[in-house]
Length: 106
Image (cartoon, rainbow, N blue to C red; front, side):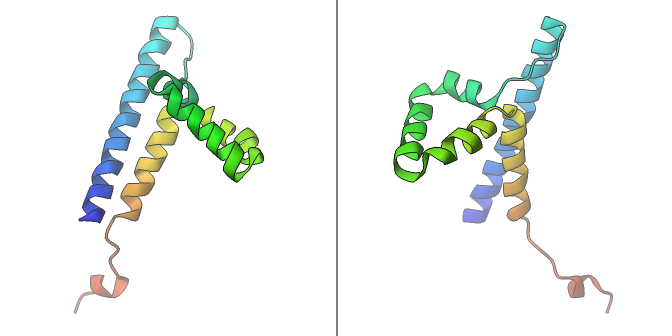
C-alpha cells in the first residue's frame, strides 16, 4: 500500500513539473525572453511561513552552513527540475525490480 501511495505521489510530482514547464514556457513567450521560475520563488508565493520556518529550523537545529550554500542553491534551481527530478526518483525507486534469471527462457 505504501509503495502504491509513493508511486502516485511521484506521478503527481511529475505532472506538477510538466505544469511548471508549461507556465515557464508561456511566460517566456509572453516576455519574448527565457523565463525560469526558481523553486524558492514558487515556494515563497505558495507558503512563505513554511519556507521561513524551514530556514529557521535548519539554521538553528542542524547547521547554518547547510542552509547558506546547499539549500539556497537548491532553491535557486528551476521549480520544475527539482519537483520533476524528485518525482522521477520516487517512481524509479518504487518500480518493481525483476531479476535477470526470471527473464531467461526455460
